Length: 457
Image (cartoon, rainbow, N blue to C red):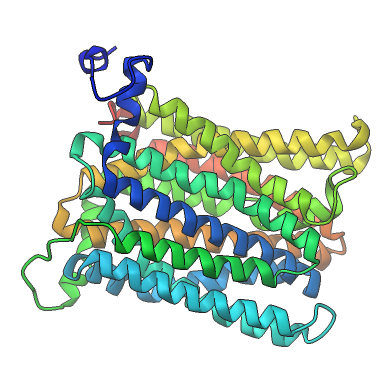
């Protein structure tokens, strides 16, 4: 136990253990708490929207490829807008950027609400897809400008020594939204047999988040203006390339997410492979989507009550390897269910799959905390926006490109080879998990600095 853990703090309840008081001290910061609540509300609405849109696209098009194009629509703006987004986050007021991006997200979700409400499920599939993908591009633009400004903004709200825990709770707020959002969307879909109400709720959540951010007193101190040039735009890439620790951890996380994520295919798993026994339409999908963030939330509280990681590099590599192995088992467990091998009574394989996804979420959260902490701690404030933009580009595009890759490989292994939709989803998931294990071995060999990296503080 560290010496600071044993010091008494009269401002906190005496019944709390010392470690617990230190873990939650960051919440005495009113600006950070307001920011965290706003982030949770905005993320909750976004998770509800993504779940509802995946459900609606699959119901209209009945195609894994249609699900894959969701990721592609969100990824394209990241590639095009990352450099100006990072530059803007370092040269303009970050709070204003967050507010403007939140407004743009609200307008896009209003468009989804109207599109879904006025185009019936059984008609105009191509028209709905055209509007949905166009609005997703707008959402992608807003998120690309929001992420670097938000990531750099939070570092100014808390003292440097509290930053790792602030990042841990920031990640926890997002993961909690990932638990509640899909489940809430599933219930709303079950009650209304449609998705428009989910999009409308997201519009309201955006308004609430805007009001909360508006009330934060801290203002970003804008550095002296420098002319916009190619050199200033690529500063973030240059900094990441020079810092081998940051480059290696971002690369590891990017390819693990690109290859190992099965989230895009969950509508197929929930509908055709492991439907929830006795569950209503949409509820099984909501539960499966919630499994990964449930595991992550458990990990958040575990990390918050422990000292900083002592062997952060090795721990990160091990956790990503476990992520890959659990992804493989998730696919194999469902294959056993399809083949009738070791059948589980009353849909028991659903809960086996749920547990494996929860393990994926728990170990993935360790990687997220290590990566975000390193990026913010090792980067000077005048470069944080651009470096955070690079981080967002690597991870964001891997999330969305991973969704496209999952949809494409499912289509290849399934209908294109004459197999069922379910078989294609299973093969895509297992192959992705194997690829993740290979990535861990390559990164551990290519960047030995990660294996040697010690205390995270």
